[in-house]
Length: 231
Image 1 (cartoon, rainbow, N blue to C red):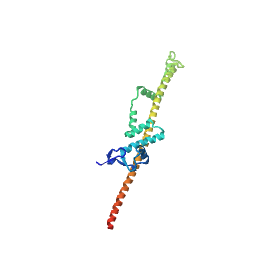
Image 2: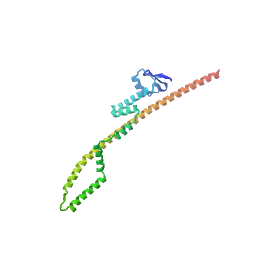
Image 3: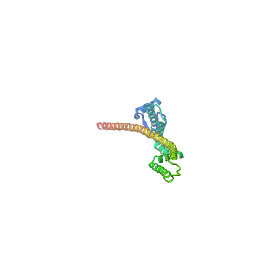
Image 4: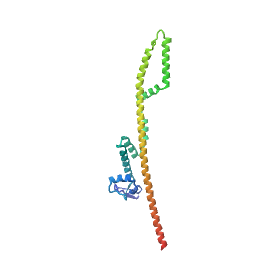
């Protein structure tokens, strides 16, 4: 198998991984030049080494735009480097089991904010009043103005309110987590698009270089043919 030696690391790589410095984008070439001042456009490196500098370039862009590399951006860059899907972590978070208290709070909030609860509790209040006014008129355990019923309603509201707030806080945490995941996915998509542009530019430049080489070979062949004709 044919190999070549990288002018950056002096390590031999397969010929298929060779990248000419002349085909590298200026912004990335400048980054390489900072770390390896002797590197020039006539030299070469491997595609794996170029990808490392592309990664550093993305970090540099983020630092310039945001001022500092946040944990979310670092996680996105890490997922790009490891070729992982952020949605996989998102699914793992969704599948995480909630505690009994959180599950109960969600159930109470779901039932307490439904027409089913309103109808059932409305019927309960009406039945309570009918029993104490009509059936137990002389021996009512909660005569008008229904002080015991008011106490029950007050206790229920006092208990239900914090439980619903717990569920709302949990929903807000889910919304914040979902927004964070959306931001990470959008950021990764943007970085992937930038990397894709880099690769497309490299392919175009490389194809142009190949076409120039083919044209030069054809010109040389034509010159040889013309020389033979002249003879």
